[in-house]
Image (cartoon, one colour):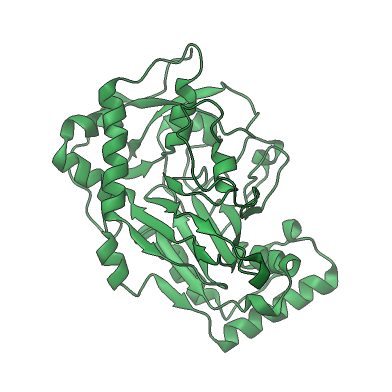
Length: 363
């Protein structure tokens, strides 16, 4: 078993974190500055860029920002990027007329807009750059067992079911979701500030905060078959050069506990994860994405999740989101413990995503 890469000095940072990223669910519900709407000129500009790309026969995976010019939309996209990295870590752009396009054309539209956020990252070992987030199990998996139960679902299987998703982060600096269709019932999005969650745990239980600043063993994502170990260890809360980052998926921690040779969590470490989940529920904002909404999360300062849902295919109320992972030009430095799974810890690097040959692409 490899020795976890962790700087013990990180755990000595014990002051509350202030700033716009430390918001509560009530704060976000009352705020309006994290939401922007496309106007008629924006929609026309996006459509014109799409028509040009369509005429060239480009696949969505090949679309770059220069192929999809959006000069008029640029100020809104710049404000969105500021909000993601320097603000609350969550931003919503709404009003894309998804009903005017078929599902495949929407992939091109979404990739074209996304290209202005940053280069796309692979989400699977075969280099898939866009993931469908939908129920792939025909409504059979609305209840999920913890991953410690034999035969339970992997993280990807949970995402591709109609069951709930616990609060977690993805392996990318920024995650983007385009809502193509919503479910007949349920499927609300949940978002919580990991900064506010961390502050609350520090205040209530500094002993458990200390544990969350220590390494937890995790499995790699099922599709991630790149170099390195099948398990790795890193803290839930990390710091570097004054920047905070939280990477967390309880499913990966639970899966690691089933593997031979992985050190077992103590009862206190498990209690710390229970408290994190409890506080995230208290701190979260619950909202419903509508068709045409594009939401963006900074995975270092935001946890996201989902409520269970029920599709109604007869009325085309079958929940479908398109997921992109981005490597923007302006990002924070990461602690050394991220290198094993992110490839680079330097700000602005093409980093994160699944371990494939595409990691070496230039941004």
